[in-house]
Image 1: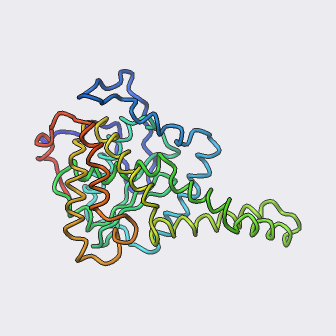
Image 2: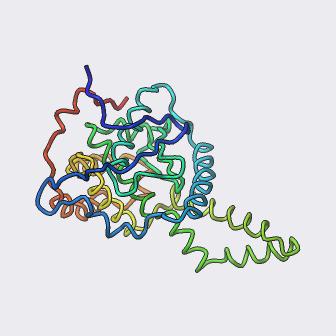
Image 3: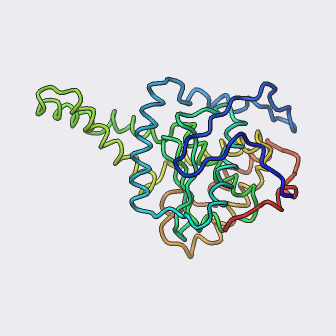
Length: 289
């Protein structure tokens, strides 16, 4: 019998979200320098205010709808969708931020390019090509943990905030208010539409900044270690991406820094989070197609 993932529930596409609670007993240290609270330095960036969480969720839904308008979801293998969602919930439930408005959801896109996106609403998109390129459950966990870190660190929302402060969005919202007879609703609608467009540009066309990608890799290392996955698998996945980068057009080449730069950045953090290597125990249940 295949070993079951340590999770509370399984999510399918946009079904009701899985919401967990932090274990009463936090995981013990698994090696020198590792503690459960090592993500606490980033915790200030997490979405705590309920209004912010609601705004992020609805922005994320609109962003997800746009992504699904450009990519067809992969629905031929329901078990694979269950599997990647199981991994996601295992990582999330062992994090300092297990709850999310309507939960976290992983969707596989029917595309052979190598790419992954995460909306501020808790939606994680993995292309079929990227999933099939993994060689272990821990490598899949590395990709999902990286995208979870983007969500938990509010990287999409920080892009919107930067645009609000430095671009013309505020001015556009003010103009909408004037034309609509000082309608606050019209101003909010204009701002929301532009926020969706800016987020799509960041996720699909331009990518996050290099610093944000590096932060997400560091976050992935911490999240993997807390859930018992081996962070070394992040380096393994980046090595795979580095090998195929020259033959792939678009995808990670556009939306992420080079794998070589990410490997150099992540390697020192992987060394600081040693965990017991239990990858062999997950080999029998691993699926990527």
